[in-house]
Length: 125
Image (cartoon, rainbow, N blue to C red; front, side, top):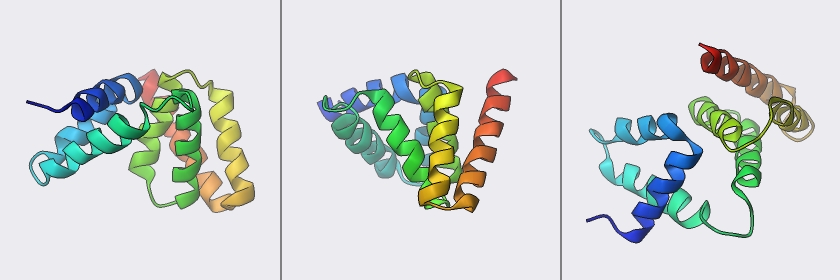
């Protein structure tokens, strides 16, 4: 039986990332189910469920961090979708990506914006 962290995390994952999040978890089942469980329990069960920040603010921070890292395109695309899912407007997401040009450099901002362009196209399909 799943523990409360897992249950809470799965609820948060569904609300925030939807199908894309579940696809990530499912893709880990055949190679490392423990990593899938840890991904549900810690980020979503322990962190995303905290009350000090709303989920929209958490997604803005996540998009900024993943953009700045510059080597997390699959995760960035999941969280760009998530940002839209939890109420960020397209303009807000674009501004976050543009802001990253100052702190992470133009290559990171460009890569983030192109990932966002793909996300928007995929959402319209």
